[in-house]
Image (cartoon, rainbow, N blue to C red; front, side, top):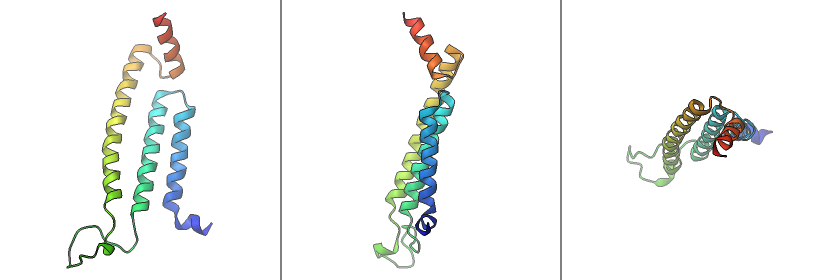
Amino acid sequence: MNLLIQNYEEACAVILFGIGFTTLLLHRNLLKKVIGFSMTDSAIYLFLAAKGYIAGKRAPILKEGITRAEAYVNPIPAGLVLTGIVVSVSVTALMLALTIRLYRRYHTLDIDEITRQARREEG
């Protein structure tokens, strides 16, 4: 239990990922799937940010004459998180645009109903 309290950021990330992933898998509504996808992305970014932070170390900006690498936090996890957020926003925007197009065509957000209607149109 003490380990869980010490690593609460990682625990929150795992819980958020679980909620988002189950939402993504179990719901038929496309809008809920987009929300679940966004939640899993946020959980991954929270986990990376939590793992990249080291208490007592500074941001990787050289000042006050300190040049030892051990005095600074590794900037790579922060860069990965920022890049991931940009990609995630783009993918979410694309998913929402496709969801709007599907709703306008089939007048529903239920993925099973959309599949049924598309098969009827096909054959």
